[in-house]
Amino acid sequence: MQEFIYYAPTEVVFGKDAEKKTAAEVRKWGGSRVLLVYGSGSVKKSGLLDTIEGELADAGIAFKEWGGVKPNPRLSFAEAGVEAAVSFGADFILAVGGGSSIDTAKGIAHGTANPGTALWDIWTQKVPLTKSLPVGVVLTIAAAGSEMSDSAVLTNEAIGRKQGLSTDFNRVKFAVMNPELTYTLPKYQVTCGIVDIMMHTLDRYFTHTKGNRMTDEIAEALLRTVIENGRKAWGDQTDYEAMSELMWCSSLSHNGITGLGAEKDFAPHKIGHELSAKYDVAHGASLSAVWEAWAEYVYMEEPARFAQYARKVWGVQEDDDVEAAKEGIRRTVGYFKSLNMPVCLGELDAGVLAEDALVDMAERATGKDTFCVAKFKELHQGDVYEILR
Ligand code: NZQ
Ligand code: ZN
Image (cartoon, rainbow, N blue to C red; front, side):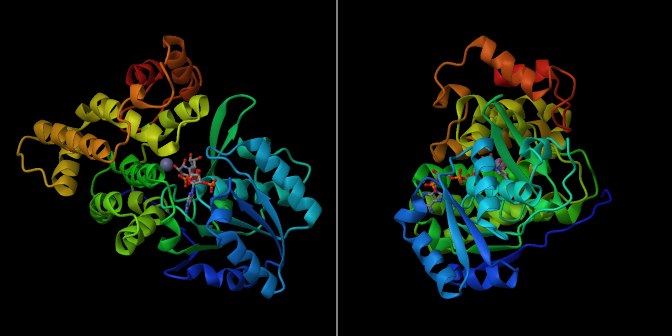
């Protein structure tokens, strides 16, 4: 086990009707003028936004709406949100939605607390972030884990770059989670979420770090739980128990606990981000589309690790490590297919990917071969190209 610092300070308010505690939470964390950040309309349609606004009004908390966040959220929309928050005098940012709204809220919070500094300079760490505004979340989808993670991801559409920022200033103050709020999700978003939840743990699990039993066991239990409840959710996304498990797994998978004490990999995420930046592919779909090619490319670095995954997560009974590893990969890909998720680039809604597009993404992922993607197997530009191809 390697040394680590664990910090996951978000207060979680979980269960049926949890959203009715939102105003009290905002008040508790010092909010009196709130910018409400949401997406393209699902929270209006479901009535959730009205509920939250009614509660804020009843509690005497002023608010201003900032709706219109798109999936794979854009930097320019967060920048405009900063202007709105500053002119409103916001002291609290509340996201109502999924990863895209939450990440936009985080960006707005950083920009509002640092007026005069370009948000992209903060995002690329050209200017160190030393303060931000408090952020709260009402979660409507189990997927990105942004409700407890230290990350946020924005796309700078002017240069075609999808960029993550990791900092403890991205830890939100509270996350309100009512699994019933996910019942209205399009099925495709449920399954994109299942893949993303699995991948936040898988991208930590494939590591050469040894002697990390507790973390391994947590990761394996989480993966088994997601797989089983993902199947149930696929059958009936109004199954409260299944959606509860997925929602809690979404948070635990990306709050750090499934990778403590080990070196992280995150290659599928980094390659997936290039696909989303270029083709606006849904995040979960970008991950399922690259995972098999990545796994096939790297598993011989340590077949025993992939074999452990196959045995502990999928129940594979095979003594030979290489054969077990291959079976674990097959079962993972079979599972993605059973959820109708794409398992190769050709199955994405991106049309035919020309040769120069693959080269371009491999260049961007590795800064024209100036740095490596990942740790389980260091991937250079040529490797990323091969995986994409
Ligand atoms: O925009 P609306 O109308 O709300 O519709 C959304 C959107 O179309 C819809 N939706 C969400 N909840 C709904 C609903 N529709 C009906 N009923 C509901 N209850 O679902 C669509 C997807 O929403 P989005 O917020 O984009 O989903 P997700 O949570 O998967 O977030 C994806 C974004 O998070 C980033 C991804 O890269 C992507 O940009 N990630 C953020 C991370 C983080 N901050 O830690 C880590 C992840 O690895 C990921 O990179
Ligand atoms: Zn993800």
